[in-house]
Image 1 (cartoon, rainbow, N blue to C red):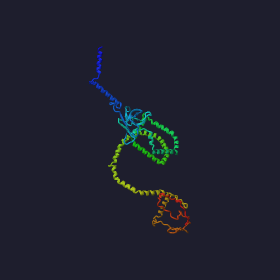
Image 2: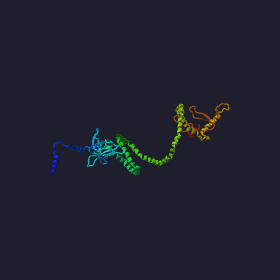
Image 3: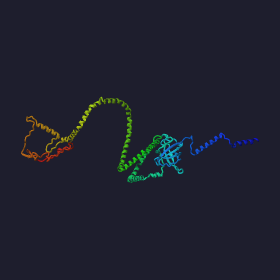
Length: 480
């Protein structure tokens, strides 16, 4: 019992403050407590863990007023994966802005072609959020600090922006468009649409075939086609200036078509005939294609033999190239060049002569030959029954026989004056006046009839362009 008060007294004495210095272990505990309190305050007021690493930073350029605020959520497929940390305006633009986002590992990886769209949040949430897509896995991976261009972003579609786009020129253009559409429907367009419904069945059947073909014959064909379209539209989005020029050119084209409305209407009116011809050509092509396939199959053996043929032909080509070099035929062309030049000049100079010879040949074939082949039928005398050219040759023979020199009187054609008791005379001739004579018998008339004036001679009409004369169309004149 006497030891218990002694121990209590010793404990109280140890706990009593004194002016002596505290132990070193107590100072270390106090410093650690202060450090721990500072870390807690740092984390509570937004500080990050020192060894956790910096978050993934992504920037995006928006060309319109974003309506975002610092702390607005960033979502992928509706799941929060980060928040907006900064919204800064872009110098030189009143609406464009640069949005900086801090993303968690749940948003990664991001690939080139990723898009950011500002969407309205729910009614209870208010404000806007950034809807992020991660891009195609086959595209390169984006690193922290990457910036999405304006072509890969889209701002919120608000009613005031829609109304601000409907300016006076836009409303006037829309009015003209609706008026033109109403006029086209009233001028027969509605009836044409009703008539075209009769062809809808065949068109839908063809469309079903096309849609079935679009599904592809192998897995992932449709997804590949969609991916290709996405790549194409992405390329168009990255070339905004070229796309703007395309739209402007399209507008100019439409204006030109509007100016040529009548010609365009005539073209459209002829379109059904063109389509009918195209259908006929398609039907013939369907008949031709199987034959073409068989021709290709039959052509395969010849193609297999083509290498052998080419190998066999190469020595002949080498010999031909040697034959045509400068030491052989090529050298022969040098002395032949003057002769060829002279022949060309001769042919050029002979062109007028050849034209005259051609005109003479037409005259002979068109006029002289038909006239010589004609047979004269004289009703007042016994016809000879032979063509005119034969009578001409016979007269030449008779003239030669009458002018022979067998009697020594020389080559002269002599005639005796005959006569009768019947005097005859002609009408007054231009030079000699009337001619008188005696006839044995009363003349029946003259054939052909001597015209009162000489026929007109035309020197400007080629002989081959004139109809041949009709020798049996002459008239018989009266007696002298």
